[in-house]
Image (cartoon, rainbow, N blue to C red; front, side, top):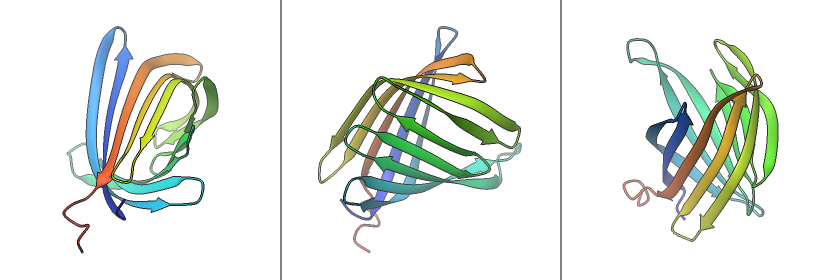
Length: 149
């Protein structure tokens, strides 16, 4: 895969029997390491008026049976996903720090030389309270517009 990639993240959360879906596309940088694939990308956080207010640097670490997402910036967190695994950590935001629990029920990682696809199904709890049953679909493909540069 090329160094420059496009990351599409589609997240669906079932909250109170209603599904909420958010999709985002980010340019990123891909690196292959001996035991994992690493993808770096940035999210721009809007202020109340929709203007850029800050950035969150994200690091995805993709292994055969483990997916890790690390966030640094206005939001700081490390989230680990493995099938039938419960991860405990903290989700730090400008509004405070939340105790986070993620129970991953499904993790499917598909890799070829042209793409990486990740499907994660998990239950999210914050401060001991059930927040949502969630699905995250991630697609990482070469960025055709910048791959020739």
